Amino acid sequence: MKGAGGNSGGIGHFFIGLLMMSGGFYMLLSAITVTSNFGFGSRLYNINAFGTGVGLTTGTVMIPFMFGIGLIFYNSKNILGWLLSICSITALVFGVISSVRFSLRTMSSFDLILILVLAIGGLGLFLRSLKTIDAKYS
Image (cartoon, rainbow, N blue to C red; front, side, top):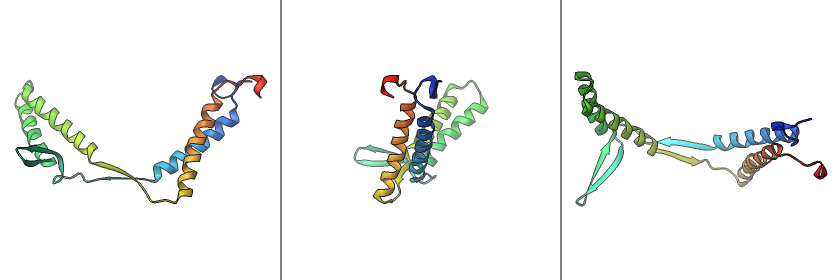
């Protein structure tokens, strides 16, 4: 009889590893806090020139976007309008992504060890079940 993945690895190891891995990674991902300081007043990029720092805010990025949209509605074949709109949206997306911060909540060492053993141990059992086991080793 074939096991998990069509190999003789074992269906028991497959399901136990899958359960451990799912529980461990769920606990790990639920312990991560995601925050952002994104807003129309926040700085996306800092430009330092001649000893002065100029901050490019999210509102400033929307100005070329508005001009680009106006140019597109005036003439849809206007390359400058498309270029302004696409570059502004790209800068906005990268600004949002760069403003996201991940942090791990405070937990005891027992909680962290439990999460890591479940996640990585489950992954090891899961991958072991997909490997063919010779009859002489079982």
